[in-house]
Image (cartoon, rainbow, N blue to C red):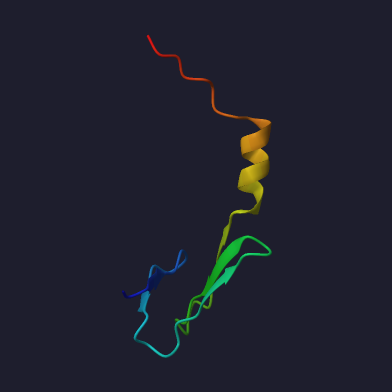
Length: 67
């Protein structure tokens, strides 16, 4: 399995084979982070799962009825 990350800001792909790929999965903070290694970009791509649980509890999906 290969891992590839794409920067949200510049759109550059980075593959697992490269030495400079760093993907951080933080289970305590519930985030996935990838810092773009493009010399002109250096954007910190953060995917935050922390707020999803709170949002789901506050506005749950409506019940589905079977006819």
